[in-house]
Figure: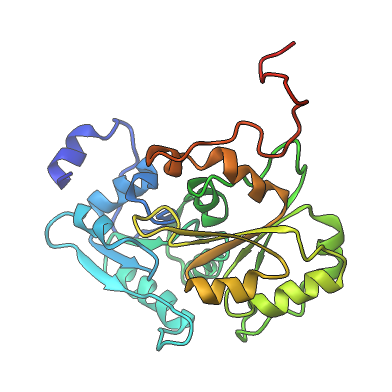
Length: 288
């Protein structure tokens, strides 16, 4: 869709992007269709788009002619801009009177450092707007047919990062408390330390046979899903060639993919309406 078509089709009443402002927007897990209307509205008005590594490049085709697109992506193990430098860049663009769209993968406030950037803008006196996005820990799992919650499996879910500021397994995480108290655990940026994390969870009482789902390139054409177990997830991920970016989900909800893999169904996969085996044998789903 062209910028002109976007202008003609977006609803009336969306906010005007004023000069000197920064909009911190989430781009979702990958599929451009998961952008919010506010994010698209920002794209069509921005003078500058500062975007992350996980933002699908096709999204940048929606900016108006003459818009500056400035890559500020961070990838583990590769040369990356420092967070402070990115924040200063946003401030400099805004002080030059630009309408600055800071486009981040997923949701800017979920392991996206959006809070750090926003506080930097506050300190500099730069006005800003927050535009939430679909976080990969929910939207990415949904594209794999794995719900973050299901009333037959869990009444709580924990989201955590698989590494801390030093790049190591986070010591500040209460692994014992999470292992014992959270029926479903969704982990961002956990592939590098997956073996260590899985061992910690097992040592704290989780079963080696507990289901694990790993979703790589969630919501994109190259999405890859591995269904495994806590005891085998690290080894099987290596064999399958699963690499970041990926979301890891631990818990019984992973079994629901047998019935909820809607993308697989579009390709002919036969789904199971009772993946948890809860229905009495011979009783239909709509039986009284």
